[in-house]
Amino acid sequence: MLKIKLYYKVYSQMITWMQRHKKYLIITIWISTIAFVGAGFVGWGQYSYGDKAGAVAKVGNIEINMGELQKSYSRLYAQYNKMFQGNFDEEKAKSFGLQQQALKQLTETALILNLAESYDLRIGDNELLKEITAQKFFQKDGIFNKEIYKTTLSRNNLSLKEYESDVKKQLLIQKTLRLLPVQISSNEQNVLNTIISIADKINYKILDESKISIDTSDAKLKPYWEMKKQAFMNVASYDLKYIKHDNNTSKKVALRTYIDFKKSKLSPSVQVNTINISSSKNPYNQEVFEKISKLTPAAPFMKPILINDIYYTFELVKKNPATMKSYKQAKKEILPLYKSEQKRVKLQELANASVESFTGKTTGFITSVDAVKLTDMDILDANEFLAALFLKQTKKGFIMLKDKKIVLYNILEQKMLAKTQESDMMAKLKNNLFNIGLINSLKNKYNTEIFIQGN
Image 1 (tube, rainbow, N blue to C red):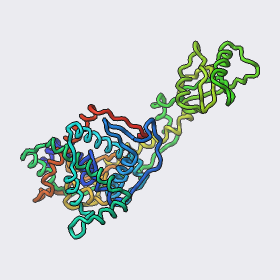
Image 2 (image 1 turned 45 degrees about the horizontal axis):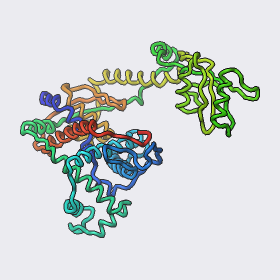
Image 3 (image 1 turned 90 degrees about the vertical axis):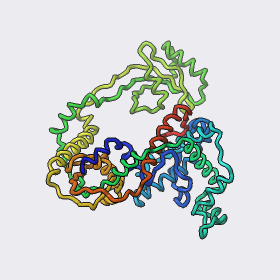
Image 4 (image 1 turned 180 degrees about the vertical axis):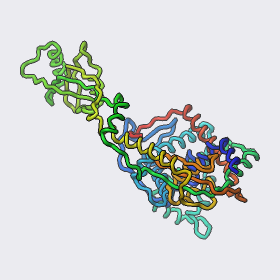
């Protein structure tokens, strides 16, 4: 039976993609507007903007505004919260880069809408009406109810115009993608049906770093620093003289003082100050620091520069090159790196020593898409584990997960399930992979500008 898993070598990329996104993000380039209804609204605080305060991004001819970004974020948040069974919070959202994901989905949607515009595609009122009246959110006893429609949208802070515009976009994307159909062969479907019908009964055990202790004495830590000390440097710094002009000094007066400064003809009444700055100790802004870093002994003076409405004039006295940190200086930076690396090594040593004799938890027969059945694992970890397990050719072994855990496994039995539950999975996989390729192609065709900072 293990030989059947050779099929996974051919379809591993598609299977991995499917397992990571099944039930939650089946189509990556848009999320249904309907998913927002009833999900609740989740925001994330304030952003700062660049030149275009009215938009967070522009893709081709299409602008994306903050309201759209907030809704996209909220839909994603609701999906992840469902995935984590209600245990998703803002800290997890930040670690998952949910804001970036939300903006990415909107820019990908905009790419498809640009393509639709180039085809001169439109959604008519009849198409919109058919879609909305078919939505169960707005029905009573199976029949569309206008009052329920209005009340439901109002409860979700959506206007009729806003919601219908979003639904039109969704329908337009679907219409555009239908122009680019992906065909599958019966052989491809049969192979995938065989793959997802494989079921394993396994014994498994999760190892994590919490039980690993590390000797962090200087006797262990210092040799580690010796090997890596070239990577731990004090940053270059600059000794400067500077004149801080009065608040009401005009640029013309500051320039005259600058000339006197260069010629060593300053009036005794002008105060010259000294300072040392570096990239990590910079009381000014990045633009000022970059200008200072370009000063040289041959050209040590900088023309007056406006900082917080006050003119400053700088003279380079000395550039102090970057120097290697001593062990004492680098210890705080070295320690977490050493502990992380050693825990990983020790954990792998423990896995190697335990794999032949461990006793863990025994499952029933599970397939590659049964992550929810591994209840003692996070859903993402379980998906990652199963994706790797069903590629393995060995009966016993261990799988290293991205979140610093190792899962020991022993395949006790295997069998083929009698019936495949998702006969159209191959079509879904090929369509999603095609859509990813399409998005990458459209990125080269339509320029994307991001105006929101932090993305």
